[in-house]
Structures are given as structure tokens and as C-alpha cells.
Image (cartoon, rainbow, N blue to C red; front, side, top):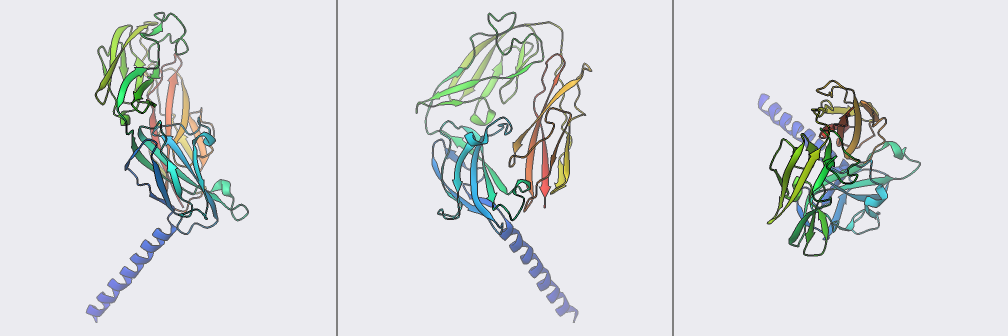
Length: 340
């Protein structure tokens, strides 16, 4: 009897496991094509295949392109909308979409369901899937250049106002690096995912991180070299500002969170600090997940109400802090997992 009992227990466990696997599969709202982490060509027309699973009331699906670290709260959604697809398309809720012609590096493709009004409070639901792909142009890089005056001057070294007339150390600024390709397209090459690397001759004057955020650390002159593919460009940088040392503040967005739908969520950055002890200004923004309403994004504690989801979903937020002298932190990130 023990032998048969063990056999039936195995069958029972197998049935339970199969039930949960099938349920998870059918409930899934997921992008089947294009595939996550695959490489595609700038301007390429690619097929969209979406599995809506058992999500009820879907009337249409909208698709949006975002660059790797693009702030969703700064960009108009309409400018990012690449395709709206309905149930009568082939395949249903899919179709053909064009990879942005100016894209290069890591890009996010976000699929967001539009739900039938009247059945549910559509504003509280977040039915979406998101993948990240790598984009490479089918063209040669001809030239790298900087969208700035040359040499790049800060403080009293500048002959005209630049970057809102930076007059202090610790300021962090995005360096605008552009590439001209053989297909005639100009593409941004600032991010590491585009293949760009940076070298600074004197890090006592400026420092730069791998994604092209330039920080002023001391007075003087130095040369920055940017490399991408087999091309390089040099930029002289001159800094002549107030000599008072100002260390950049340190952002602390807190630990990753896991919450349930409809729970209030607090993004707590109050553990951020300035080495000199001055007060801070805060700025929260969203860089992953379907767009949500973020309350108090310029306070130490931003808030939102976790949306209803059909399955576990990731939302990512970026925190930057600035001290009273204007020194900025580099970005820090917080992931919030929302479960049904």
C-alpha cells in the first residue's frame, strides 16, 4: 500500500504543478516577439507578436520606444508612441513596428494594454510588458563630435553663458556626444551601451562616468578623449570657478521593495546625505514599467499607489540629489516589484 500511496502522491503533485504552470502561462501578458536582449538594426521593421493570455477586456495595445535610461516623466507619451494595435490586426494586437532610425545602444520596448471602459477602473490597472533590446546601425561611424563650444569652458573661463553659468565645483552634467554615420543619421553616443568609452587626462579637474556624466572637481585645464568603434575625438575642458571644495552628495533611494496591488508605496530618499552636511534637493523619476502617477517627485519621500497587475511586474525609479551649492549626485536606482 505504501508503494501505491507514494505513486499516487507523485501523480497528485505532478497534476498540481501542471495546473500552476498552465495557469501562469495562460494568464501571462507578454511580448513574444521581438525577443528580450536580442540585437536589431536601427530603422529595421520588425514583427510584433503579443500573447495577452487570459487578460479580459483588452481593446487595444500601445507600443512605446524609450532609450535605456530615459525619464518617462519628462517625455510626452505621444512622442514615444510607435504603434497602436487592436484585436483585428494580424497577429492580434501585433503587427509591424520600426526600430527608431536614430537609435543605438540599449532601448526599451513597452507594450501597454488599453482596457474596455466600464468593466474595470482602467486608471488603476497596469497591464503591460517590457523588453530591452540592443540596437546597432547598419552603417559605419564616420565622425564623433561634441555638441558644445570648443574648448568647453566653465565659470569665469567661459566667454559666454554655458550650462546656466556653472560657478562651483561638484556640478554634474551630461556630456553631449554625437556620431555621424554613413547612412546620414546623427546618433547620440553618450551611453556606455552605444560602445563609447572615455579617458580623462587629469581627473583632478573633471571626472566622467561610463555613461558620460561629467563632474567638475577642480580648477584647471584637461583633455577628454572619447572612443567609439574605430573613431575618437578630443575635447579640451577649462574650469575656473570658486575654488572651495564641494563634495557631491550621496543618493540613497532605499532597498528594493516588493508590494501588493493597491498598496501605498513610499520612495524614501531621506538617507541620502551631503558630506558637507548641507540640506538637499531631491528629484525622483521613473525609468521602467508602465507610466504611473508619481506624487511629490521633488521631495525626500515620493509616493504612488501600486496599480493592479495580473502578474508580478517591475517598476524602476531613479533618484538624484543636489546640495545647496549646486553639486549633483550621480543617479541611484530603486526597483519596486508589484504583485497581484
